[in-house]
Image 1 (cartoon, helix red, strand yellow):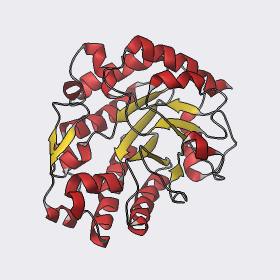
Image 2 (cartoon, rainbow, N blue to C red):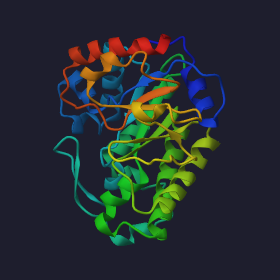
Image 3 (cartoon, rainbow, N blue to C red):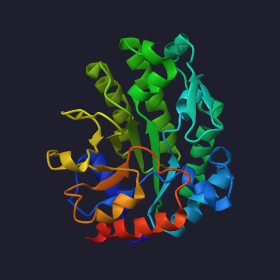
Image 4 (tube, rainbow, N blue to C red):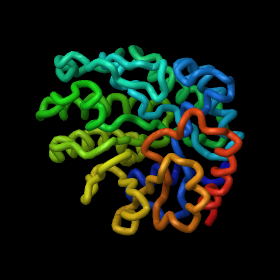
Length: 301
């Protein structure tokens, strides 16, 4: 592992748009796959902070990555905010929209406990932050504002009030993770919204909180993406767009580990390499370790 590399400081510098260029941190979303460590369903492990912390620690040791992924975009935010979520399938699926009145909510301190997975992620982040040596890299990957509104309200997810709510909710959650020790927030979107102005405003609200806590708010897409990336967040474009981004940025790669062996030398000027969705929970860990071993050479190239 890359314990000697000051990744937390480098991520903080990325969030502020400063610091020298450097080889990137390799941080794919390894979350549900960690449940294989205890041969239990991902839904069970990710709802228990003790098991989640143990499994993430053992998986990190097995594959050699520097980061712990303490949350992934698995509908946990929507569940906490009142949507019906089926967690017996993986990844979890939203099966019922929340009440339209959810967008009137302004207080979120007690909301996140309504999702066992989200509460477990926050607690795991806090525990790992205090028990791991050498300032561990703790990545909280959250559902982006456009995708969250779609999960909560479906086709009715539109209008200034909805975007203001999304910004409030996710900035409150960002604050919770930052205060629990997170090194970075990754906002994962599944596509572009129709209202780019409202979406960008929500991203700005979230990014302001991240910046206050001196951590980056990264943005990645698992689907259609913008031609012009919002300036408030740290863009993580795919390889074909990477060279077009002038500001300090990351890189988004596929969540298919077999493709990672070709990454070294293909990361451009990116400072962190992520995936926009989690690696499949049933991925063979031995094969995953082999793929990570190849990709980790990027951190020292």
